[in-house]
Length: 183
Length: 334
Length: 118
Image (cartoon, rainbow over the protein chains, first blue to last red):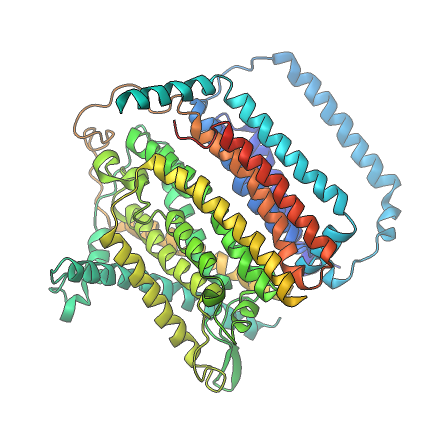
């Protein structure tokens, strides 16, 4: 029962895994960030194939389009492209490997024992992911979480500004003083 | 979806790409001609009658130019960056309709590539992706001018993307759909520019900043940054950046026409759908003329003022516009 | 609807060929005579001083952070704009409150001088 959709899905899934590996293994931070962009974009394609175009485009706009731009900026602005050659925390690698193996085993167990679970998921109606449907449920059923998201965004703004402009305040005042002296 | 359908869409895609590339070539000529006329000059007139072969000559010249790659540059990203700049500029046009449908060779052909129900969000997504090419071009050149230009361009693009996003919400609210075909069709009684002049103005300004056109061409300010992010590029790679810029100009004109100026709609278009692309072409040509006119008229805006204008004037204004539109639509619609 | 997405996919794949072909053709046809001076970094004929990839102005990064937050907000407003005609008054008021909350965030950033180019 290999349909075209399944094959395309498989190909893109492989790209997702490959780009994730590339992100982990590249020594240059810019390349790692670009691999992550590729990863986000291909995950968006997976959403698209699964019939959720809205989520797919949100994934591209927010993750690939703004979060990764932020990452790229931080890497570029800090001049931190090249990682040092050696591993700074050598023994962490083994612990990470151990945890990774445990996680893989968990996944395998899940696949073996819960394979029957997949049948329980109903196929959603075709219009399920349409923007109007998303809007209807977002603004009626999930109204409170939506408003809380607004608050979280504001808190994040405040936090980001406080963290980055700790001493910037003085800097601004000084600039203003210099400007007023000029006049 | 059968073979003939796929073939139809492949042909349409190639056709659209050729139109955009040819459009790029002739928009450069159009720009030089209009600029020359505004500055009381004649403009290119040697290659062919009225200089119509000038783009061809430019293209051939650029193909045979030597391509330099700085020794200290990041070679892979340096080559990748122009490609990453051109692709978003091209694919953003996929959702713009040129007409309804015509019958050609006995089969009905839809005059648009794709009618997706979240087309406006697609525009946002592609716009946000288009930042990478420029940022990476600036960074990978390992040149201070280029890096600075790339950073400036990126910061400017994201700042104006917010206002752009809010300006594009307004037609979506009016039409009740994100499909560009629906948005154009719902402008049958009246173009949205007459109902929402402020949104159109915000869209236009933000889009100009988004594609780094003057007066927002600070990232390429010759006097201080040489050529900005493409300082180190030459030959075909430079041509690709040039191409991306002009294709983006055409794209924002097409999108702006579809969102606010009635797109392919015009007199008798319902009886004769083949007129659709013609109307769209005329509208795009007029918007392009305004863009060139602005370049000829306005001086470049200083970078700090540019950022402040984006964040403190355009963005709150766009937000307020969405707010007021929402309230007014309730009061009017009940 | 998924059909339309496959047209976008076809178009994307084909449009990738254009820049790739342009670069490939140029690499065949263009002359290649590099020398160290040609391949040095352009800096008005003067040798470049210091590294390019250094720590740089933090203001760019603050703009990106603030942008990220408002980008998420815009994304939330799109489904609202589409469903606008079908939504009850409650939902519209809800979004207006959401916009006001985020306007508070913008005002905070404004007051704290985060939008200032310094």
